[in-house]
Length: 217
Ligand SMILES: *Cc1c(COP(=O)(O)O)cnc(C)c1O
Image (cartoon, rainbow, N blue to C red; front, top):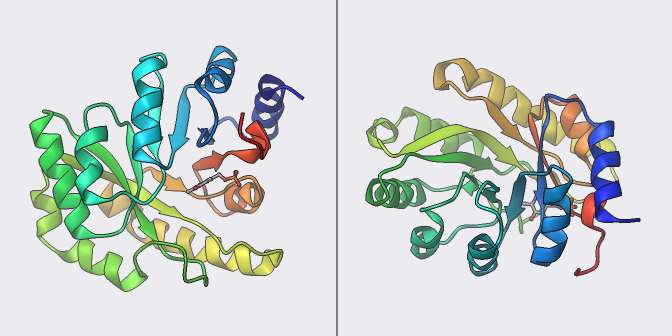
């Protein structure tokens, strides 16, 4: 099936108020352009080099999201155009984004990544670290960063109960701070678990293989 058909079929399955990030990592500019022509505007990438190469040649009204682990020394390459950075898990990275925001005279939107999975490989801060960041006065001094909400990845498992519990714990954390922090985005859910994510308050899902398949195209 073509990526266009996949995209439209997928969009029909999800509620209209859910934002869809098409995760286009490893996919060619031609493939991205195909889904762009079908109306998709938000694309997610997880490698800085790949992202800047694609951004340079693809339509300028694409909203690029960075969904990988962002190294501080690479913030400067994406700061001029990035629309949302999903995976922030340290205060020092926020500091660097603030600095680059200042240089580019813009406010850069970010999500804080919370570790909910039991696996050791997943990045993210603990619930306690989040509370510390929210309490720290420093956060309020970041004039060029806007924290818009939280991001999380569930454990890669067939155990639905575990995924459910992980998403639910993140939802509760999000709800706890949403009003006071003026948050609007909860980024959870991928091809294998987006339904559970939506049931647990996700406002933004990140979908790769369900649209583009598993092969490089
Ligand atoms: C690759 C990736 C996705 C998309 O995964 P699929 O299972 O292909 O939908 C979502 N989020 C992050 C952070 C990713 O790295």
